[in-house]
Length: 365
Image 1 (cartoon, rainbow, N blue to C red):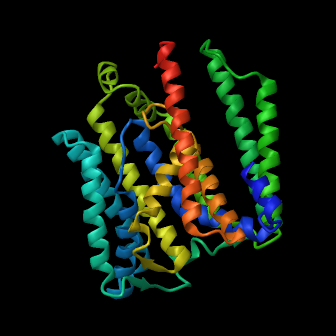
Image 2 (image 1 turned 135 degrees about the vertical axis):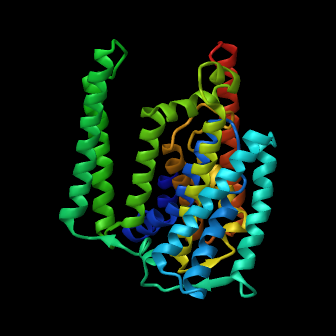
Image 3 (image 1 turned 60 degrees about the vertical axis):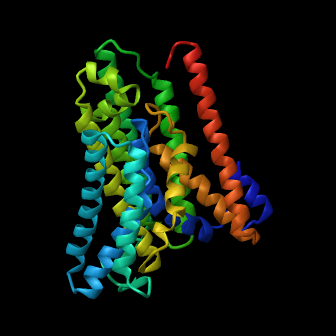
């Protein structure tokens, strides 16, 4: 519906060029939002992700440009820094008992300060536009055999996994999707995949950044739904005491969730820096944090824990970035964009609260 409104206002909105730009713009925030989904699933919040994203970009640039550290090693150290910071947040929250809100708020301030220290008085460090990090958002696959092949491969993989899941659940005597529903979902996926490739091929091709975001979302979704640890994350969102009595190692799960959030924040920060070919204080300014949390919630992840998926991050960030793109094409001031995004977020939170209250009234929460 959002796309239809903006296309009606400006026919350039659904142009291949604008959609290609949009598909790359969502990646940095989308990766951070996936990490936020993990934290929200256990009913907690991570306010440090924006600062960690900024710190990641600043640390990479400071090591690579100022200290001459090889790019690959600088990237690895930046990501490990985010993972370590996330693990520290989780440890302090879990083992010491400091509320996650307070721990990550302290992290927001501390990591933002360290980011500014690394950036120095100029508040930015530019790096090579030909290196690995810059390539993350500049590499496109334009060959039709590759792009359409990837669309076909993804569709076929979904079909095979769905049939395998149906046989496995049927053998265990569990409810499973009808064959007709599986084929209908596969057909819908094929239409979306091939249409996306067709449109993007009319500009520069399929962006590497978008493929990486989709790969992370798919891997995270499989991890949450099909591994024991992932199911423990969901269970913990339903209630810590109930999860503990069911044999869940609550401390391990909580620390792991914050580690994942910090890691993905650092990776997302590298993509934000890649888009600008420079490390700046923009990610730590607060907007990346707000957009990442808003994306997770608008996409359908509950603030109360236990409900949501990593696909929520993709849907939410697509809505937020589409609003920003459509408003920019109309020449609307950023202040109005913020008010509209805030209104959408409020509607999503109200819907979540109403749904939870209805579930509680029927004894399902």
